[in-house]
Amino acid sequence: MHYYYNHSTYDDAKDEVKIFETRYADFAEFWNMLTSDRKWYYLHPMFVHPEQRDFVRQQLAAVDWSVHPDRKWQESHQRQWKKVLTDPDTYYRPKI
Image (cartoon, rainbow, N blue to C red):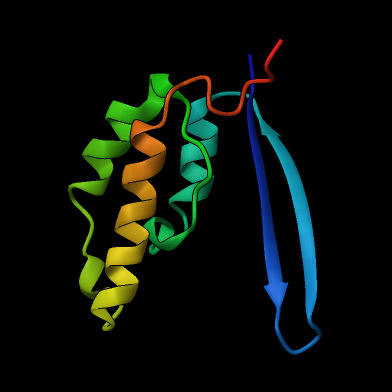
C-alpha cells in the first residue's frame, strides 16, 4: 500500500498552474511531509481517506486558525476540512 498525494500550485505572476504527484511508502511519511509546513491546515484538501479521518480530526482540533487574520478565510478552510472529513468514502471512486 502507498499514499498518493496529488497537489498543485498557482503562480499568479505567470498565471501558471503546476501539478505534482507524489507517492509515499506509508501515512507517517506523508504526514511528516505535510506537517513540515506549520500552516498545513490552510491547504485545500480534496479527499482524506476514511481510515485517516479520525487522526486528521484530532490534529485539526489542536491548530491555531487565527494565524490568518481574516475570519472568512479561516471559516472557508474549516468548511473544506469538514467536507472532506465527512464525504462518503466512495466520493472519488469510479462508478462501475
